[in-house]
Length: 87
Length: 133
Length: 202
Image 1 (tube, rainbow over the protein chains, first blue to last red):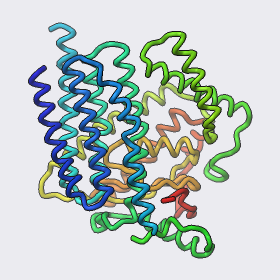
Image 2: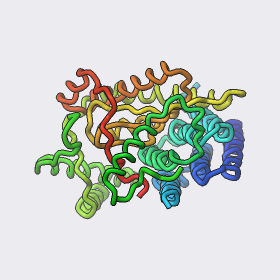
Image 3: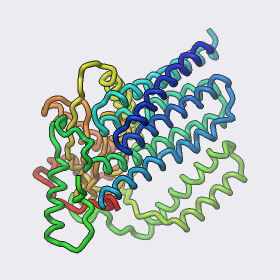
Image 4: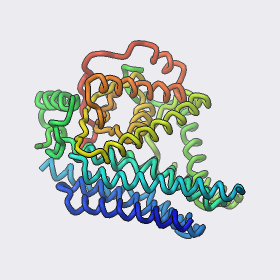
């Protein structure tokens, strides 16, 4: 299981780094919002993998909160971008 | 092989597949040409990747309380992800960030023109459709 | 159902049924969050759910049909299959070098124009990578879908048929008998009547 955990952690780290590139480069604020969503998904996967590796359910409530509230950021950024565009 | 070992192997497979999907999404985010195609890439780890990781997690934890929590996580994510995608997509459409040369057809543009024409006949109300591009 | 208001007013019985469904769902969620099934949890969940339903009333949703288990199972299985296939396709598109993916924005007019059907079809389409809802026109029941990875107009038409098939599976799972009959009639053709885009960028 340790090999699997290291492999998954590496894959997720590379995915997170690529996503960060898009957050930094992203020409528009919406690009950054989408990339932040993906980063959040990567973080959720990392927390779940940690829970699976150590067989420890302490972090699971964090996942519930992230799943419920994760979309709020994108939605507010999208509304902000749409409104700024009307002016 | 015992049942525990089999479940562990399946769980490991699910976790690796989920991580691979996240990696593919990261690559796609960097490589895809415009915002809307990047949003397609973002849907992968948010839906299938997350479900796989949660399945792997549930197979490892194997206790009723944790599995109900994981089911809730999956249900919430499936319910909220389309909302965010739709809001971002509708905010992105009138912008210049879309590579229109890569579009085969655009049936929304014609629709928005129609709406605009009708709004022009009945002035006096705010006009959300005619956002400056 | 293709003409007339999308939301006919509900009678008393339907409204009560909606409330009972909402309270049951919320109470179930409460018990799942606590993780243990005990009388205290169930009763507390019912109280909280009842307060929520009274304080935040929902707009009426017409649910005319009933749930058909076979249709629902077929919809879920096909949805999972679509999810896996589409995820693999988009992942393949991402790692292929020297190739710029083409896309299209198409309008699909659903044959059954009810809020529930429109919402469920849009949700299912959004969750599958490769299709993205840009705009939903509630007046005519039209979805504007951004499709990634199409190369020819024939593929676009195939995708449009795929959306209508998805709608048919949803109706077969939860629609009423009348809505099922609507599916057999030929799809409405021609440009749809333009209707205001509700709530766009307010």
